[in-house]
Amino acid sequence: MQIKLKVLLFLLLAGTVTYAQKVQQYKQVSPNKLAVNTASGQKLLQQIKQGAAYLIDVRTPEEYKVTHLQYAQNISIKSADFGEQVKRLDKDKFIYLYSHSGNRSGKATDTLLTLGYKKTYNIGGLDSLEKAGFAIVK
Image (tube, rainbow, N blue to C red; front, side, top):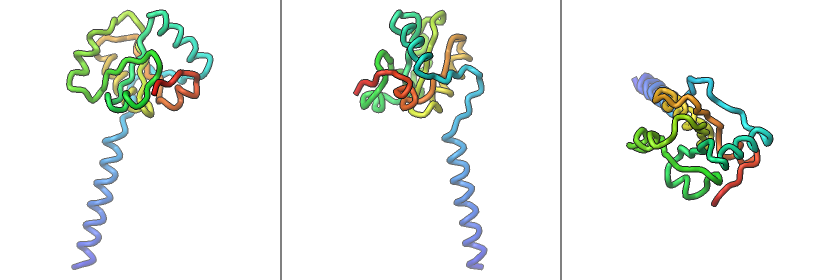
């Protein structure tokens, strides 16, 4: 009886951990993902500096305050008014989204595409963008 209870508890715990891992990982549906390197990063930055594109950090305001990319605006995907904040963006401009690892920015990219923002791209995570030449603000 005790062995059955231990096995049952083990299976329950293993199932919970597996479920939690699946919930936290979002797989971007759209193909709108850019692998940014030094050369492409400079082109994106030029568009952003000229006002032809937005650079959006979709992390929480707390994460943004600690560190973010230069020229980035913060619109947290976890914010209750995410959709309202996004409506302020011009649909004719490119929108480059990033997060810590690229997971949340992938979800945000898919969300913006469903809202009619066709020039929306997930450009990945903060660390990889810093390596590609984006300046960090601390």
